[in-house]
Image (cartoon, rainbow, N blue to C red; front, side, top):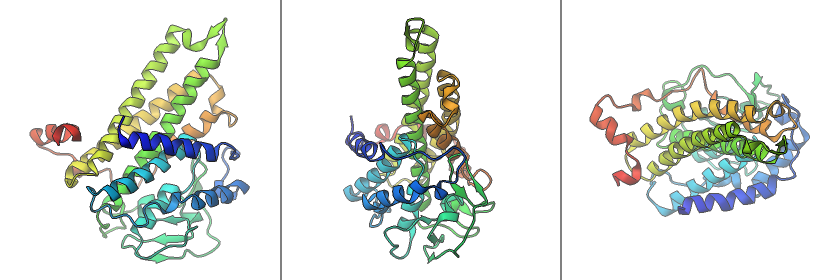
Length: 328
């Protein structure tokens, strides 16, 4: 087990303990209109989750300090998603990292790489060049996505999530993409864990469902899909520590493709294993899979899918496909 994995487990346990008694909203509700949302956000701020990247310099990815801060941000985002809660944590982490000035500790901040998600609830808007502005009061959401997050439709962005015609500072888009992948990974891990718990505890015909060969096979296939996603996301995270930008972008776009496919597979299979129970808001699986679907489709109409990172040369493609540990 790597040091990163050990850190994830410790942080996951801490987050799990904090969110154990958090109330769930009603299905389809705008999260920002619930009584619990402000209290949950206040807790996240108090525990320092939102300010992890405030002093980070991720343009020096090889330094121990930058690795530690990036690992902590990834761990917090993943653990919260694993528990099935949607807060504007990763969007605020990215916006605070990109901001040219300090933001209030309790700010809900968004950056163009958020593709409008949480923007109606934001108290600070950070532009592609890092300038900070205060949104006009009384903003309303265009839509609420499957996870209950309000969003503003964004149809046009520039390269790698920046505003049209404006390039982002180094690593900002990469951090945003990595944290999105970590959130997808966390939600997928939570959904798989809930499905496995259900088929292990549910007894039919005198034995747990997991003892039925067909169910066991499907559960095994689910585990394989999750393993594919973990491998792709962890590979992208490892390449953050190198100076090879093209290799990092290749790993990010590859992991995004894997995440899209695995999100669909995990949600479909986990709900099959739950029977009809998973579609109800009483089932904890419900919240994990809604977050998975929402993340999978985030920025659907405006996202740069990173096709420029795909090499056309066969030799280069083979080299970039090799894991970072093998190429070191």
